[in-house]
Structures are given as C-alpha cells and as structure tokens.
View 1 (tube, one colour):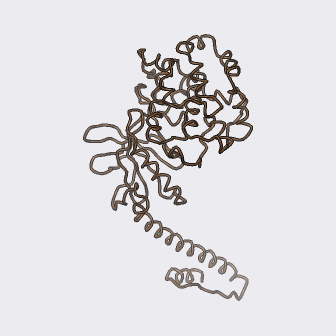
View 2 (cartoon, one colour; view 1 turned 90 degrees about the vertical axis):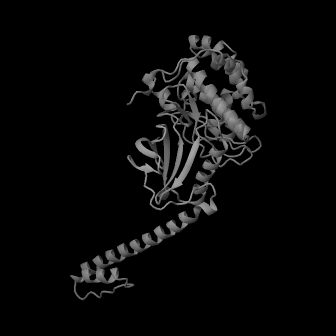
View 3 (cartoon, rainbow, N blue to C red; view 1 turned 180 degrees about the horizontal axis):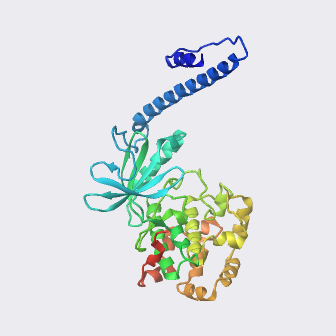
Length: 382
C-alpha cells in the first residue's frame, strides 16, 4: 500500500491518509510518513533552488560590482575553459568556502589565479555584499605589490574572480618551510618592505586592509616579490570595525574594541609590525613569549598582556636584550629598535603612519643593498 501512496504523492496529491486496521498496517503507516517527509523536502528544495536562481539572476542589479549570470558557462574544475582564453590547469588552494585554481591565459601563457566561491556558501546578503566590496576594493588599487583583479564572472553555481597569480605559497608557508621558522634579516627586510609599500598604496586610496597576517601575503615562486592579498575585510578608514582581525596581529585597542582609540590605519601599522617580528624572530613569536597556548579570539587578558609588553622603551629594550646576539647585531644597523617602537607603540596617536614607516632608516638601509632571492628549496613541492 505504501507504494501506491508514494505514486499518489509524486502525482502532486496533497496527502494520502491510511487508516490501519491490523498491527501489520503500522509499518505501512510509518513508510508512508517517511514518503511524506521526503516529498515535502523535495518540494522545499525545489522552491529554494528556484528562489536562489531568481536572486542570482538579478544580483548584479543590487550589487553593481558583481557580474551577470552567464548561462552555459562551464563550472570550475581542472581542464575547464573560462571564456575563450583561459583554461584551468590545477588546484592552488582548497579552503572551507573558496577554492583557488591555477589557470593559464592561452594567448600569453601567463598564469592566473581563479578564486571560486560556491553560491551555496552565501547564507546572507551581507556575505554577498562582502564579496562585492572585495571586488570593488581591488578595482581601486593598482600597485606591483598588491594582487590585481582582471575580471569576474558568474556561472550557475559559482562566483569567480580572475586574479593575478601571486605564487603558489604565502608568507606563512614560506617561513613554515624553513627549519628556523624565520627568515634571514636581508630577505625579511626585502619582502617586508614590499608589504609596507603595498599598505601605503592602500592607505593613500582610503583603504584599510584590517586582516594583515602571514597568510595575507603571497610570495612569487622565485621569491622576489611579495603581494598583499585577501581584501575580504577591507574598508574605508572611517568605517566601523565589524571584524577585529587575526591573532596575534590585532592591535590592543582593537582587542578591547576601545571606541575612543580605534583607528583602522593605525591598526594596520600595528599588524605589519607584528608581521616583521614573525618574519625575523620566529612564527608565533608573541604567543610564545606571552605564554598563549592558543591565540584564539582576542579578549581583555590578551590585550593587557600585549599592552604591558609594549608599554614603553624600557619594556622594548628588555625584549631586545632577549634576542639572539648575532641577530641583534644584524638588526642594529639602521636603528631597528626605533622603527619597532614607532609601529608597536600602545598609544594610538603616537603610532607611526605607514608613510613614516616607509622612510625609516632601517627600511631605507635595506633598499640600498643587493638582495638574493629566497632559496628555491622553500618552494619545492611537499
């Protein structure tokens, strides 16, 4: 009987009622209930799919930096064609919500990065708006050390951004592949200066990054160029803080969400200061010296510990004295400690702006020396 009832349900009959007359009919009633639930789920899924299609077909009208849906556009995957000129050749990164492919421009043989976001990952309009803002932000920027966007498109299942290929690894992976978990001074200075130049370009266009970390810096495969990436949380300087950033790169006033002291440009400068410490002194330098087992989410305890560590010249000199003597000697050239104090001062109004960081003696000393590229062994396949 349950089979007959299922046929009725599939025909569109609203419901089928079975009146059990004997105990054996209970199984039939249960089977019918399962059929009923499955049918309702199927109908709901069809409704949601239709609503989603209607939303995405008109999304470009409400989010002007998103492209129109292209019917018949091939979904991303190895071997897929993107338009007339680009072909997907491999996977670069497989994240929770995004997948990045390596694509090749068949006209020039230049590599490109194809960032793909499945539409099912968008749960709210705010999440769609965030991607649109990322596209708009990247279109405003044009700098050798900021990853460029070449175009965007929309298939039936994905939003895709065609980006400049920054390299197969980010700074976190490059440093993590080194036994010492840090970089030699000249290599660190050479790459870090490029990050600072990229940030200065952003700030000059009223854009604050708000999530600077090792993973936000792509390194080209030859090790000569660093590029700032991941603009998903970027905002205008005056925009409120909707996202604090990633530990341990968050400034103490942002950890506390002290509205009287919040300044997005200053928070970015703090983050590049911590980035430099991680490059020179070892990954997770702050968590190690402050005894954090896991940085996790920022809280008042984290903020107070960081403020105490960088509370003044005396504390910084104590930190300086704890550095390996050989490294300390290398860093002494160009007044490194003055630069560090300027970036990591707790008093926000006294923190250096990024253009002052660019002019620092230690940074300029590095620009006059000849740099070697990072060892190719950093980029060997794992």
